[in-house]
Image (cartoon, rainbow, N blue to C red; front, side, top):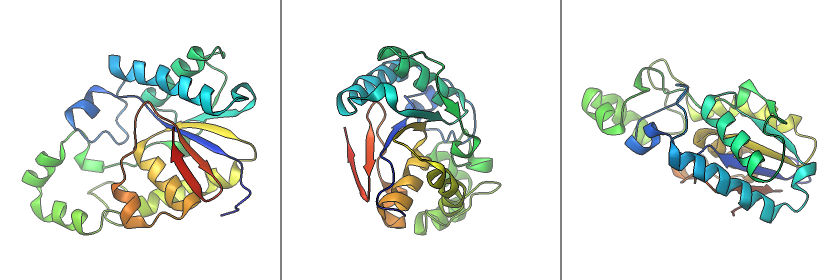
Length: 196
């Protein structure tokens, strides 16, 4: 990746009821809950504190409901028009296929052998009807190449892991298990990243 690449302010969508219940959302379109809306406002304030020229940044989001809600709330919280951003289909969350809607506990009970295979190699494992992180990286790579100016991206935990692997060289084993916080901003600058 190009070390002089524009700065990326990555924001994971706020909490949903499925997040709270530990359910695999993937590409199911679940709305924010009350805490998620508060987290979206908080992410806006954090963005404002770390990016003094926030009004001049490009803004881009996954087209899923939870990411659009997060983007519109955070933009409103910092005085920008809620709908002044672009959608990019490539930013949708990794799909867990047949496992979407289940908790990991339910997956381990229903399909213990498959769950064990995934635990051995989270990055490359493809759930039934789903997608691996390695496949997600292939989908996300062109998005990163298309970024030409400092950009705010509102997307998903899996997508954040792909960005960390591609932009910052985080190894796949570590990236697959990293916590991706809601209500905070992941600043990616060159090969470095930090949470604000």
